[in-house]
Image (cartoon, rainbow, N blue to C red; front, side, top):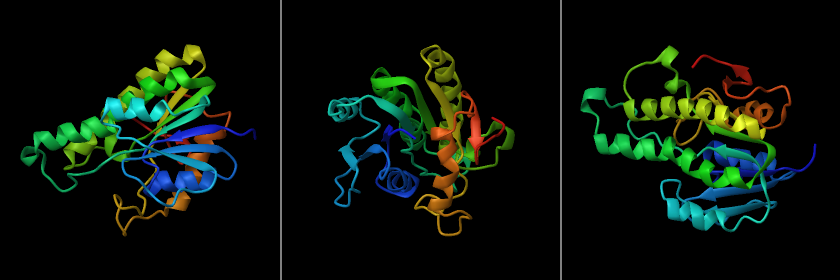
Length: 217
């Protein structure tokens, strides 16, 4: 496998950090964090960037010196897990949408012109965004991830002529700060399930995946 240049948002913790640790030995990994961190793995570069701020994204990506092969839009928040919908705070919904949906759009707008032909974009979504399996509560998060899934399909249709594929995936319920200690899956297990979407040539674009298998929207 040839070395790829991989850009990961929110790579300082959780699944993002797991991806950085898994990939940086064989690939050129560039990841983002909203704050300075001291433990940057060898073989990777950390850029300070806020996905909700256009100026921050522009300033960070101006430091890129090589074309990007794979963009992983991973940065996300879940601030309203137990809040009933009619008690939800509109400001929190807007904040969540800005991070989870518009963040990937903002970053893609800047990174796509820097991508190699045959590039891939992977948007980290959630089963909580599936229209086919809507539960209750967490309306900010659910709306943001459902919208991210829609963005994935539209972007793929627009970029496939440039041989850039766009997919979204559900990483499962993972033991992270967001997922909590009772989650069924470790970060390492989740990361291994993501690998095919990065490198497997049989993966088709414009779809929603869990464990490298297509799932319903």
